[in-house]
Amino acid sequence: MINVIGLGYIGLPTALMMATHGLEVVGTDYNEDLVATLNDGKTTFKEDGLDDLFDAALKAGIKFTTEYQVCDTYVISVPTPYDKIDKKIDPCYVVSATNTVLDAAPTGATLIIESTVSPGTIDRFVRPILSERNRGDVRLVHAPERIIPGDMVKELLHNNRTIGADDPEVGESVAELYANFCQGEISVTDIRTAEMTKVVENTFRAINIAFSNELAKICRVGGMDVSEVIRISNKHPRVNILQPGPGVGGHCIPVDPWFLVGDYPETANFIRMALQTNASMPEYVLERAFEVMKKEGIDNPEKVGIYGLTYKEDVDDVRESPTLQMLESMDIHLCGSSMRVYDPWVERDEVANQVHSVDEFLEGLEMIIVMVGHSQLKDDLSAFEDRILLDPRNVCGDGENIYKL
Image 1 (cartoon, rainbow, N blue to C red):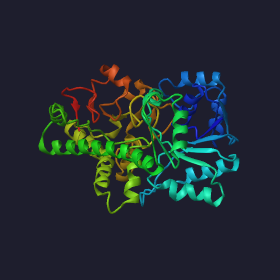
Image 2: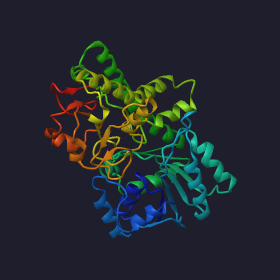
Image 3: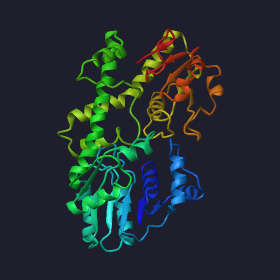
Image 4: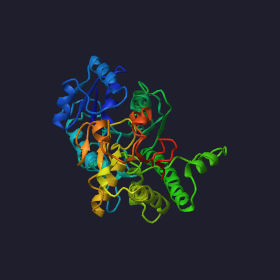
């Protein structure tokens, strides 16, 4: 049996995927309401293909509980936040889950940590727990997750995976476990290398995004169209510049690279600057919005709406959302807090002035800030075309009433 600990955006799809590929799985989470929802036959967030996978897992016999199980394999998939002051990882959830696993784990159990951690975290925080509790029999493994909201089911099946273990034989046995569903290449290495590779992957992406965001600012000052600059530059066979945007959200790219800054503050200078550039974008969009409002003669923020609350298109995930960051900036500057907010994917009330229908959102608006390029917008842009559009995502095309970054 496999006990998956943590049934959030990563743990739940992982547990479901394992269950639908012939493995006996019990999912555990301390959140009683979440577990009750799953036991009522309902998923807890929106994701393409998740409901079908959930139904198949139920038929395969998956179970959900708040109790840790006595079994031979545990998969810890809990959040790993960071301290926003010193930028170091906060391993409290991993530490808590590890301690509770050891209360239940039989001799020789395998403990797989999927949570993204900074290099050396397992040595500093997990291994000492095993030592203090005389559990040298537990086989410790790090198998960092590699999926993204919006395409989780496909990526669980097809993405390459990394398995870090002290003993190569243990690593190979866990690789065989993941090979039950993973069709990508599975690399076996040591634990610290596995920790580092996952953080490096997200740091690489963060730096690429920061370059495009800084390029957008340079082109604005220089009077150039950044989209045209990137389009032509990318014709070079060895150039692949990403598109700039209103900020970086989610629980990976804006978070994981800070682990390196926190652990290596004297060395990770380039990474720190890239993250600061990305973090500056929501306020930059706000400044740009007020520029456009002044040019268009819009003096009332109530006539301006914000489209999109999630951190990316066609998901309901608002973690580290650029829109939330921009709204926080508005509060700091005491400006624009009356702007209406709408997101077709977010049914719960997340912010003030949030509405839940496109008609209610559009009523009386003269300008819209497009923070997320949901399919709803791209498939029916005509409903928005008679307003001034500030389009930091570059999803609305070109037009006299469309402003870019």
